[in-house]
Length: 334
Image 1 (cartoon, rainbow, N blue to C red):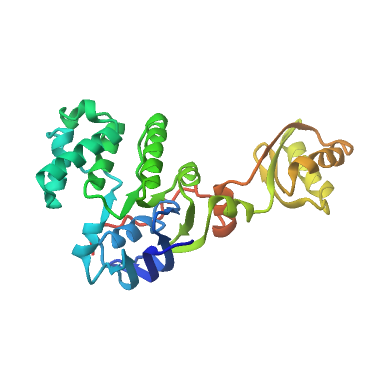
Image 2: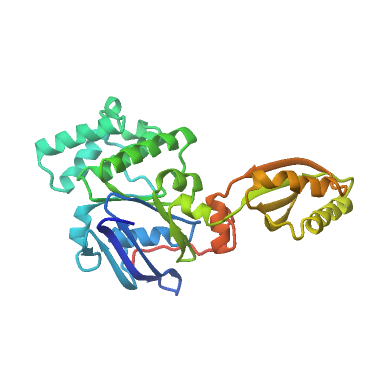
């Protein structure tokens, strides 16, 4: 991270009534103009952190500053400098798109001519100019999300907080919104994104932190984090006549590849085995010779480079796709 920090967090803790420790002593910073992200499953502490930074929650302990201002000591000043697009779209369904933006501008005490210019600019930016006079109730999900994003940008904030901004959108709308977010960031707005979509974090974030159970496991650029895994994944589909023969084939693969230098990990799968292999492209011919020459029938093979899901597994011990049904639902503001 280079340049002045617009977000500074040190030893931040949030414990809810009842003892749930949603944020557990995290420390990080976000540079001006950066597109930074929190990647983690539901219940990881992402939304709690972002609500503290947006002054919607009070921390239990630790330090949180936005634009050089302590979020607890100067909440009103912080709010004037940030925008917040929440996970749930907050719009007046019985007002038009233009009326929604004008209302937000008035709440920020923007003057008439300035507000009119800003609303026109945002409607064009979000491709909503043609429907600006229609009721929001008639908008599609993607249009509502873009209007909600525009409402967070009316007062030209220094930092835009985005809490799961594409949740519930179809793939086409999600991709369109990604392009809008990148364009806004390139224009100079600092972005702080929370998401559990790996592709979204990979596509948008110049740097991200993987967060789980209220703690930051690792942070860095998506490319650096994937390189830290140090191995490609080779999935082998095995052929066998019955369940016993299939299990024996998995055992044979483990035995025959024992001591194979490029191999750094082996996991049994419903279709065969998954292998962690350094420089898989160059190692696969030798790997297959070892197996084929000893009677192991390989009916399919696929190779993939490390993903952010692999990074999450490496640093947390589980997949980000794992269900979190046992995590508590946290309600309340303070």
